[in-house]
Length: 596
Image 1 (cartoon, rainbow, N blue to C red):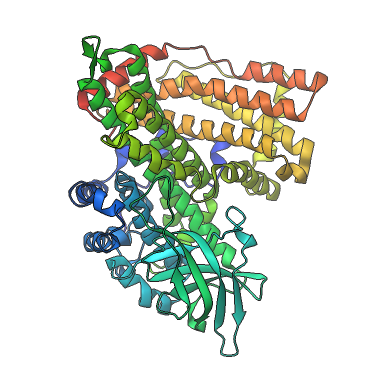
Image 2: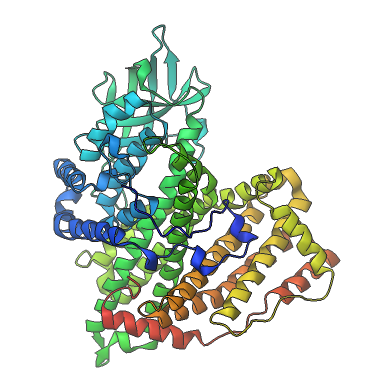
């Protein structure tokens, strides 16, 4: 039951937003959610509020029978099958709906991890890469919660270096395999029934397998003593002479990287959504606490320093939400534009590959915005934020792993410009031509167009200048290092920061422009949030560009590039204090995130 998401969405290539002008009406935003999307959001929220949050203490006591019961209830509501075709017991929803479910599941972080391992990391590879027989056998029971799934990629000696796995699969005469090895940090590891396991056939060919706990030689190690997520199971999974029948090979021998990395692309995107949902919930907690906590005879919400915090929390989450929904819309538009069988995951697979850059951006921006919001939530709670009596402390601990999950933020920062460079070199995205055109332009007089006086025109012009700055740095990096750019991790990370700020800033401007055109509720606050984000992005983009250029060139060449950078990024500061105060006051008045 695909939910159409107002298909005027532009069909772009991944990373193409850096060199293309996009109209606000060609971007999907939260304000364009359909009635069906909103109903599934309400269903998920009600499930978390009524059935998960009251049970957090029991989950943190490792009552895995309760985790299984909750997964079954998820199955009854259809929440486990958002990405699974109807033929296999799922709902076959679009990726916007799937993201909405993850976003709303996030307020119970431990159970959110249990849910994510089941719905995203186990069911999805089967939907994308499974044979018809495999889908029929496993997916219906995974979508009802009768079977619990897990995903086994990391090992004691290979976390970020997934292809360095040591688990071996030895081919047998009957076409089956014998697996030996140990997997680490496996979510749902203590009680899962089905594992997606990666191993090297004959020590060389990285390959995916479907392994059942019932297979002889499969066992779980002890529960890890973690900093947070105490209500989710995390254990090693040990494989000792495990015989896997030939029909449980997932995909092709030697093609396990396609399974692993495409599932991670989607997992990263969904993790960004969970971070957004968690941040929105924390903003509400912070606002309600600030309204009732009195110091010096008045609520702390009346103090400018607290208003600054609440306003900034809202601004960052606004931009995060904008880029997430924009990405979901692009994925759905790409899937819709690709002829496909609803029971075949190939169109979704192609879309995940296409938007791998945006998925990494969603993961890094999401985890770092959530970290900021939860840190400020603890600060607003003061001493109460540091004790178990208030949820701020648990949120803070639970969220730390998000910067490690699904590929560390460092790995993803290298991937963002690295993937763009590879696509540019192949001619898939015209970034090199755009960078050369910019180089010619820089030799002439300054040509940044003046803003035309329309709503957010100054901010749109600023975003265009940020794009030019990124193209200048990108072009300089390609010229300086060529194919060896991948070795220059510091430069790549500065470039990644620029690209993330640009995608978020443009997404915020497009969302606010659309909200104003649609006369959405609180449209003026949309504009406030976009203006603050774009204003502050100028400082971040320029700082990242200066650091990257300083690492690559020197002397007159550096002075020329820095002068060009100054000509490009001419953003006059605005009164962000007043805009943040407006956002904070509305947040406190509502007792929740203002754009929910």
